[in-house]
Length: 331
Image (cartoon, rainbow, N blue to C red; front, side, top):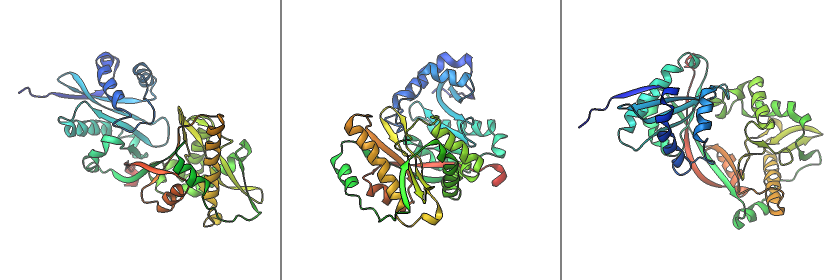
């Protein structure tokens, strides 16, 4: 029996050619095994992102042959985002996983003094929760819900959605650029003390929330849909938002629904959600846009949000553990 000799190192130009087979193995399983909504980058695009420093990739070699890798980035948000861990096959995958995590923690030791590590463990990766918990990671359960276009049951639920009465002081309009400062204020207030702020610490500050809103409205997180983004006005002043964008292809997404504290408990978030989803459905029906679905993500223990989405015709598709490792300063 051949003794395995493992080497773990950052991906470099010397390894690009022999790494391609491993990357393409991951790419072939990205949707089926890891629940990716879209195909990942082509190999040459991935290598370019690594060369330009947008992504960092740690490779595990088994007797000089790459058989596992880990991808992370710290250039998109204030968190260190651990994007993916993939192994060819399942033989000794726990050992490989441990070695990759150890190297990742070593390489990010300085950054982790002040930054949270965020790791969505989608698909097959969820089997490693026990292993990663040994490194101090904690978990939040996230559920992905979908409203499938053309599904008669979902569309009927949306059409018959019972909404609370709304006084004349309130009205709902489409987003425009003049609302951005109010959006930052409202979303910061709505999310700063939530579980979302644990693994995306940007919500905790106005500056961080500004970065999130800017990346939504400036098409960094996908094509922004201002007409389908709903804004709740109270006496003409914005007090609630339901953002909408396209994450890619034919998939629409509602990344944020938030409302000021003093206007909660009146069912107004449901009004925002209803208006946004109906807009996306209507666009698909008349051929203005061709969406296959609208999706949302929320915590598995956020029963109020889950109930609201179900009431609008969404159905749970899958859930996954969102792992996070607090900065050394906060531990």
